[in-house]
Structure formats: structure tokens, C-alpha cells
Length: 132
Image 1 (tube, rainbow, N blue to C red):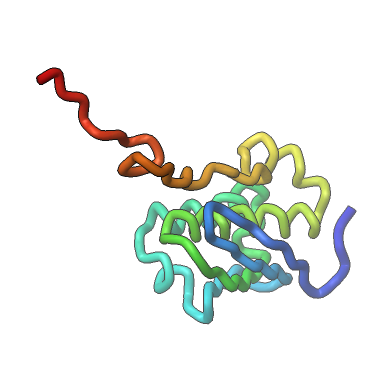
Image 2 (cartoon, rainbow, N blue to C red):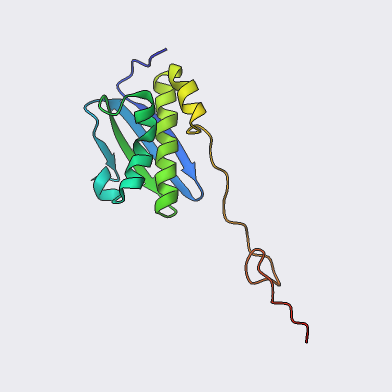
């Protein structure tokens, strides 16, 4: 089933990052926070990670992607954008589910920083034990 709307929206999340994604038919332009993909995420590895859901379904040149991302660090934002693009693609065309699911793009990575406990330096780091 293909969505006939002009654009499709979805939200992707990772740690404390949240990305609002909008995809629409176009010529493959990706804009993140009003900047081109190469400007916002300078590292090629991060750019490839953002593009991976589009490459998996073969729509990298057929869809324009507009993203608003906030919170977290670079890696969290990259993975939030990837998650959002995958969810938007799924809304756009349900037939993409097996491909996106098998590559793990639809699963929300729930890992987050564990809270610090009292009496410890960090979440689990305790004082060094001394024999004498």
C-alpha cells in the first residue's frame, strides 16, 4: 500500500535525541535543521548511517527528507534521524517493512545512561578497595 499524500511524517528517538522527519517525493535532497546533510553531519560515516534506510529500499534519489532534530550528542542525533526516516518510509509504503525490520532500523534503541547512585562516584563506580 502506497501513501498518496504529498508528505509523510514520523518521529525517531535515541537516548535524549528526538528527530521529527518529513519525507516527500523529490530528487533526493536531505535537509537537517535547515542545513544540508554534509554540513550538519560532517563525518562520512554519520552521513552513510542517515542514508542507510533510504539506500535499503532504493529511494535515495526519489525522496526529499526534511528533519528537525534536537537533544543529545552527534551519535544520538544520527541514530534518531535514521530511526525517524525508517518509520516515515514505513508509513509511506508498508511493503518496506521486511527490509527495514531485518536491518534493525525500526527498533528503538532504548539504552540510556544509568542514573548515579548515592555513595558511589558514578552509576556503578565505587571507591577503590584497599587492603591496608
